Image (cartoon, rainbow, N blue to C red; front, side, top):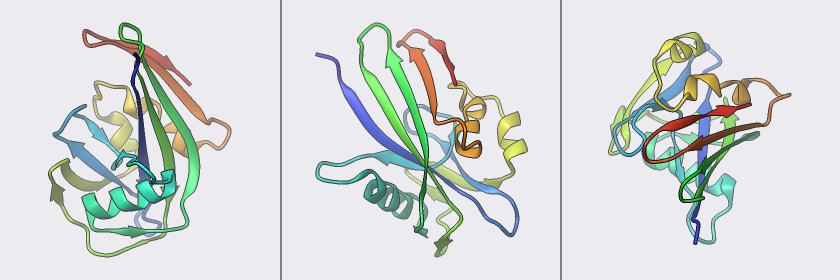
Length: 150
């Protein structure tokens, strides 16, 4: 039976610097991305986003805006990996520079888009930035990333 994973990913934007918080992931799907994680039982998507950001970064966030979804489909197992995307500029607290998921740093969008990414993350950042785009879709299997569309 195919499996469905539900996760969140959150773009935190610093209005003063124009930079966004990124995570250099070292645990599963290693790449630069925005922090986030798996939705627990009896937890809403927003509650998950708030919890994951606090656990991974030490920051408290609020006033989240839904940006859309990234939908990955495994074309061999038929598993689906759904990533609900949120963004906010409303945060407080002291940043934890490193956690078990990876290291955190602030980068401009241009810097982030210029980094080589195995999963195409730099290409679907537009779902966060453009209110007219609300979904990115990709196909993959254990042997290769097949591509995606926005």
